[in-house]
Length: 294
Image (tube, one colour):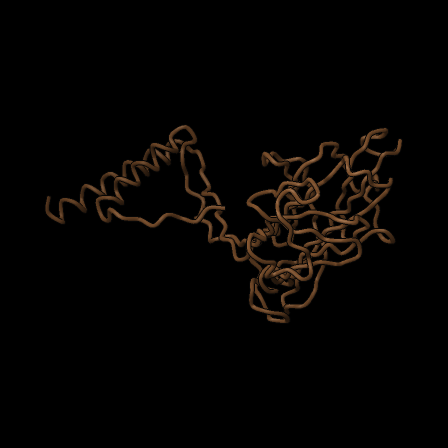
């Protein structure tokens, strides 16, 4: 098949696809993938974190979230990470244009640890302003309880809420105005912050996932910060802890890749449409790099 006939056939197939798509009136928006810029699972060292203790899986009866090692933070130690560097690795006080990003860390919640009632810890992920200096913290406020008030009253559990302030003076895990939840099963939980642009303003989803990656809860923070005044990441920090040892693992920061524009697409014909587009592309180039996934 000569080049002219090949181009004509490709153009015809593309017109057919567009016609089907436009008649359907549906809409497919390509998913946003994410590229890890920082990842530390403590398998060989603690690089990127300040002062935690690296321990082997099984230490204190706790298996690592993954691999053969994890880290622990002690009471009042203030262990923290810069997620590979403030402002997406550029350093401190560097003017930075905001882009969507996530930070996450696995934390082991030991409901059967014998803790005293109202033993607390906080974990925050902070963001900089556009000039590269601190703008705001977004804090998971957590505590162990066995008392008869608040979510899960009368059981051994962790109670967790989300705020912009730290315990014990300016926040309280069981604060009814912050939608607290109870977690009553021992295990690893993923604590994730998702920073994104919503209508020109910074929003932050603070998510908790269980060990099977099922979503436990989300708190959405509408910050009121215009996105033009917002920069990149700052730190992740156990800014307050009363626990003698708190295990954590799999810390990561990732940024969003450029998302494709919305494409009209029939929901029931999505795979067919994508497959036909693939045929057209393959007639021109039989090799394609895979996109990174979250």
